[in-house]
Amino acid sequence: MSVSGFTRALIGAFLSRSSIVLIFWLVTLIVCVQAMFKSSAMVGASALVACALCYAGAFGFMGSLIARREKNYSTFDLMVMGVIALVIIAAGSALMIWSGFRMSLFNVGISGVTWALLGAVSAVVVVRKEDAL
Image (cartoon, rainbow, N blue to C red):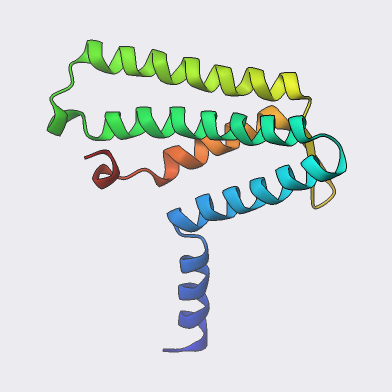
């Protein structure tokens, strides 16, 4: 294997779908625990729960959407699941707004809601049909 091939393989492995979610949750845990110790346990815990809610809502809906044929979901079923997912994501976003969580990553300020919605996007990227079945 040449050096450029090795570099591409290393970058490809680092930026795989599962690695993206692993990095997101690792950073989330570090930042939330840091917020618990430095400012408020309630703010850090709320931010962690809010990220989990946004992730779970997006993951659940996307998994159902991908496995719709195998599970024989109707359009109405998918609409109901979508509404439930949106309510869960909205609850996570509201919790993040309530907590007032903000973070700085590489000297860039990121609002808590933006970070939680990034978790939802990471769930959409990582979900597979096998996970839903």
